[in-house]
Amino acid sequence: MEKKDTEKKRKIVILTITEDCNLDCVYCFEKAKTKKVMDIQVAKVAIEYEFKNSDGFDEIEFDLFGGEPTLYINLIKEIVEWTYAQEFQKPYLFHLETNGTLVHGEFQEWLLRNKEYVYAGLSLDGTPETHNNNRSTSYNLIDIDFFVKNYPEQSVRMTVNRSTISNLSKDIIHLHNLGFPEVVATFAYGINWEINEIKNILELELRKLCNFYLENPEIKECSIFDMNLPDILHKERKIKKWCGTGTTMVSYGIDGTKYPCHTFQPNTTSETKAIKFGEIDFNLIKDFSDPECSNCILEPTCPNCYGMNFVNGGDILTRNKQLCEIVKIRAIAISYLKAHQIEKNLKQFKPNEMFQTIEAIKEIQSKFLSE
Image (cartoon, rainbow, N blue to C red):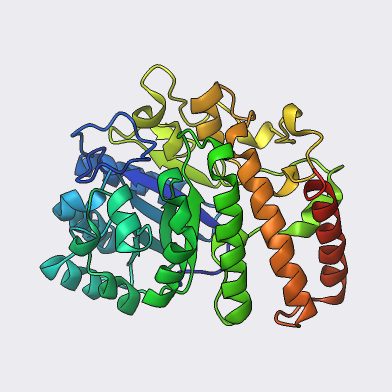
């Protein structure tokens, strides 16, 4: 199965093979790590079930998740090799998201022998300085070239932390210069952002990134700039679901219990608050609006995590308002970037798309630059 095929309907099945990790990242949202490991029989039952009960999907992606899954390399091998031996008819792929510190030697060779079935993605927070500050001084433990060379279509994931925000542009440019085709940068959930302390710094860093992308139009912008501005012109519409949680996505805990996604699992929410798959019928929710956001023009394009909403406030629809200012700063930066891309004819826009983007730019800058 190809890694990316937007025309096909894909089911995401997360297998949390361990709650253990060899790092202690400063922003980690998994607050209740344990040494627990998924039994191979639990994994087999889950995989068999998904192949038998995914008729509405063209293909399945099994995400091997943790903690850090490569703490249990033999379990990873057994899961993949057993699945391959079953000769399931539906196309499938295993995706391994790793901190990379344990991906060396024989395991690298095994990954390369199994590239048809296993895709490895790296989490890396930028320059050595930032990464080491965030992720337990682990930069030099990673064979970065292995991931760049052997998974040329795979994005690199980074988490943006408040303490390293002043290095944001350098971090993202560093990842581009390493050769990754795409940088997925996410602002950390569950930390105190204290936006007044970083607002000016973040604005400056995003302006630096805007100028970098304008000077290098062949480089795909990082996900911080992934906001479809014309969506704000249609606020009267119901807010669509942001991700596949509980519908096109399911997560299996280490004991085989099913959850809407990994953020609803006990190692994130606590044993007493964890929500199992099906306890909330996400198919029945027709509008994912947050009443407190009804006057915000950015709600239709504002990122949302229903699991972290639940962790922070006990309600899947009530957003973490600490991130509001960050989204506004992002929107202003994106409007600046899109305006200059249009002016310099650096990107191809369809006529109607260009018109709507210009209207959205005007509305964003009128709303937020005048505040």
